[in-house]
Length: 300
Image 1 (spheres, rainbow, N blue to C red):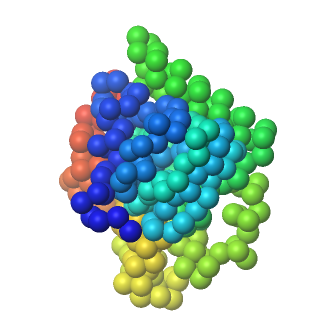
Image 2 (cartoon, helix red, strand yellow):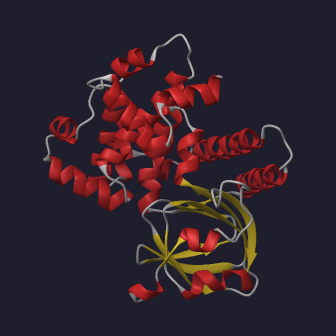
C-alpha cells in the first residue's frame, strides 16, 4: 500500500488533460499508451468523479480500493466516486481510451429514471469494477468514446454543452444496455448480502424518494438500523444514503422546474419539502442557483 503522501485526487491529474473548455476539468476524453500511464503507476488516485477506461491493446494490473485486478484487451474499467486506484504493472503495448466525467457534470445529465439505472448497476460495479466486453461491444464503446471526443472539439457550436451531454447520454445508455444483458451482474443470486441490501434500498428509493427524505425510513423498511444501512452504503459505494436521496430529489427538481406551468411552491409540495424556503436552500446548495434563477436560465 502506498503512503498517504502519494495519494492524489483526480482533479490534479485531469485538469491538464483534454477537457470540456470553459468549465474546468468536467469532461475529458483521451487515449493513453504505456508512457502516458506513468502518473497512474506512481501514485494512488482518489476519485471524486467517474472514469471509464477501455483497454485497446496490451494488459495491466491495478489495485482498486487496495484489491488486485487484471486488465486485458476489450476490458472496460468502471471507476466512480470513492474509488482509490493505482496501476502496478503495464505492458509495453498497452493502449487505452478513457472518458472522465466529474460528478457535477453527471448530475446535470440524467432524469431521475436514468439516475436510478446508473445507481442500480453502479452499486454492483463499484465492488466489481471490470466489465469484460466482446469484440463488437468493445468496438461500440470505442466509437461512443470517440464521438464524445469529437463533440469536445466543437467549441464554436451554439449548443456546445448540450451536444456533449447528448454524446455522454448515448454512451451511458449503451453501457447500461451491456450491463443489463450481463447475467453475472444483473442476477441477484450473485450478490453478497450487503449488495442485496443496497439493491433493495435503491428500489425503495425509486418508489419513495419524493416523500421520504430520511435514512430511518429506508432502514425500517429493510429491518436494519439506520447506522448499519449507512455503513453498508458508504462502504460499497463511497457515498452516503443522504447523497443518494438528494441526488434523486435534485434530478426530479430539475425536471419539474423545466415545466413552466408548475409554480415553485407546487414543486416544493410535490417533493414534500416543509416549505418553499427549504426547497430553495436545498436546490441552491446543489446547483449554485435558486430555483427561480435555474428556471430562467433553462426556460427563459
